[in-house]
Image (cartoon, rainbow, N blue to C red; front, side, top):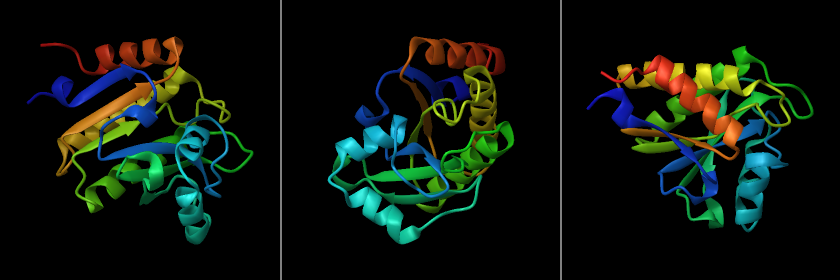
Length: 174
């Protein structure tokens, strides 16, 4: 199976994905605020935020995992690409994506859906996020992993176009 069969770009709502886990574009304090985190909070009954509160804060560039609470999604991977109230950087978004894959491997997950981490309130350009996200997915699938499918689920047309462009450039059709 080639990489283009294992990595997909989708325009839609990440909360509606039928994957083993979705990734939350989180802050280090694991406060479910706006964007993807807000959508998760709205789809849940408070369970996920309570689990995040028990975990406390996590280091910048790391990821942790909670249940999916009442969302219907088995797991939520919280990727800390920025500090609460801060900005996202390429370096820490990349680290948080890699750490997310490590959490998926630990739970032996088969499918994971990612948003455009750091591009909302974090201010990272969608083009930069797309480049590092697709590269990280390609590199992860080249190693030993239980993950069979990686989806990048983009909410806006601009984000979808940027990810599709990076996908076509980094994973050319044979």
